[in-house]
Length: 278
Image 1 (cartoon, rainbow, N blue to C red):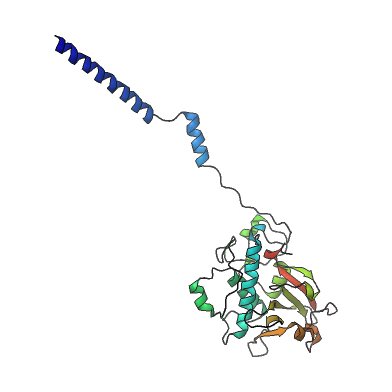
Image 2 (image 1 turned 135 degrees about the vertical axis):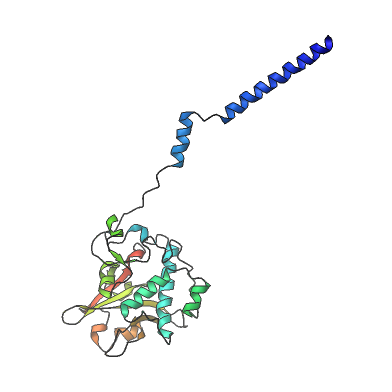
C-alpha cells in the first residue's frame, strides 16, 4: 500500500511540473500586448528624413551639393587643377574637350570621381595631388546623378530635380551665370581652382573661361599659371595653352588681360559647390 501511495505522489509532482511548463510556454508564445506591439511597429516603420532642399545663398545650387568639409574642398581643388593642367601635356586630348567650357566640365566632373586604379589607367597622370579624395559624394553617384551643372537662373526649388534645371552639359556663359559666383575683379583674390571669365565681341555674346591653377603640380618652380582651351580657330580644333600670370597680364591683345580696367574681363569666379570656402 505504501508503494502505491509513493507512486501516486510521484505522478502528482510530474503532473504539476507539466502544467507549469505548459503555462510558461503559452505565455512565451502569446502575442505581445497591443501597446508594445504598436510601439515596435512604429519604430520599424518611421518615415525617412526628408532631404534638405535649402539653397542658403540663393544661387541655384542646393546645399546638399555643396562640399561642406574643408578637406573635401581642398581635394576638389587639387584634382581640378591637376586634371586641367595635365591636359596641356597630352598629345591627344579626350574627344569631348573642344573648347574652354569643355575643359571646365571635364576637369570638374573627373575631380569628383573615385580615383581608383581603373580610372587612373585612363588618365595617364604623371603625379597625384596630395590633397586626398572628395568623400561627400562621387560622380556620377551625386545627389543629382550625372546632371551636375545648373543651367537655369533662379534659386533652387525641389521641382528643379526633375524639370531640366540641371544637365550634364553647360556652355561657358551658363557656367559663369549659374554655377559660379564672383569673388571680385582683382586677380589677387584668385585661389587655385578659381576661374576667370571674359565676354568678347561687339554683341557681348562670346564668353570665355580660364582656370587659375596656381603653382604647377607637374613642374618645380614658383610661377603661377592659367590654363585654358582656345576653342576652334578657323578650321583648326584649337589647343590648350598654359600662361604664367605675368604673361597673361601682359598679353598682346589687351582684351584678354585680367585687369579691372578691361571691360571684357568679368572677374574672378568660384564654383558654387565651394561657396563658404573663403
